[in-house]
Length: 221
Image 1: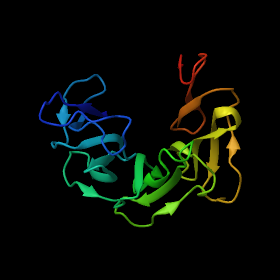
Image 2: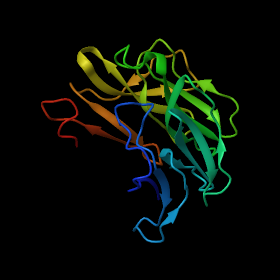
Image 3: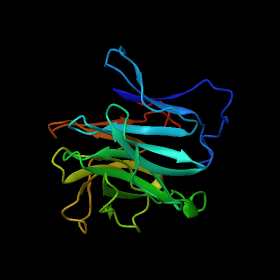
């Protein structure tokens, strides 16, 4: 299991979760057994490391790192060695990186700083990239609004992501990377918020979060 922890360190700026160029600093990556034993620290710096995931073969870790207000993707070996930056963008904010089944390709979503706070909802594009930094490919069209919280399927071909339709209705859709011009298939039907989807390793089940409260993203189950 890998996760992010914000250190209790007075030497780093407090930051602001609402300001994407000023996230809380001092967030580090850790690894442990699923029961919480054998904790191992993987990073040691004073920047923001988060949104971490592990390749299916267990050999690689991919994560987001914000340095000087700029978010990019990095990879490293599962033991924390060999850190390598794989995206180099000053105008995009990358996040939620996840490996495809080949353990070589990373899927992530990104949005442009120029759009933040000016266009609502913030347009987001889903990309894939080889974890050596090559073959960057857009998997959603740039004029389709927000494509958020992407999650690859175990077949290496499909993925799910969240789109906002009329009346601020957040729904989960299924995309096909081999048919980029095809419309995605809507999977959820609920007035309000459906999000944070994930797919079971056998590809048969979808897990997601639904808000059943009267306010946006309240009473999540």
